[in-house]
Length: 67
Image (tube, rainbow, N blue to C red; front, side):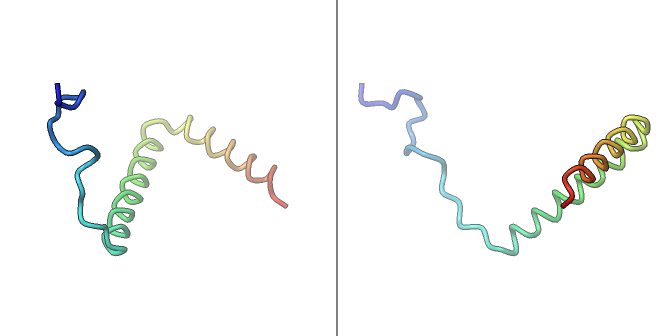
């Protein structure tokens, strides 16, 4: 009856990783942004019409909120 409810048996909470350095964070962010750009390019090639519509809507939204 002294076991935790989730049955993991370990210490509560997430495992403790060493603190992330600024350089590690920047590397992960660079990889993420590179993959995001790659995905957008792929979407543009696969669905050019939808991409054009999305770009037009985004441009209109930017014009609307410009000061």
